[in-house]
Length: 113
Image (cartoon, rainbow, N blue to C red):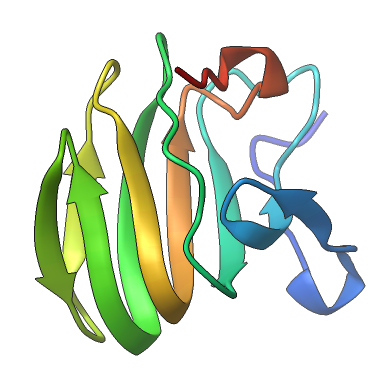
């Protein structure tokens, strides 16, 4: 097995998520490090949190707000946000972001109040 992985986002199908639509790269049982997502935030997303995941958002396009534990933080292209486990969060506005999820994304670690 190679010591690296390569993803082609033009070949990854989008799935629905609390934020809109996500393409998730490096989702593999043998990958325990991180996953990389391109997320289209199409409207106000649902407040949620993760018990295990840390997420890093990098806003590529659009603007709006990221709500973090009830605080609205304005974001624009090239804003980065690190979201620790337990932080209730959501994005508001139309944006395209890169989301790094550490450890790899697991839908069982998406929690809603």
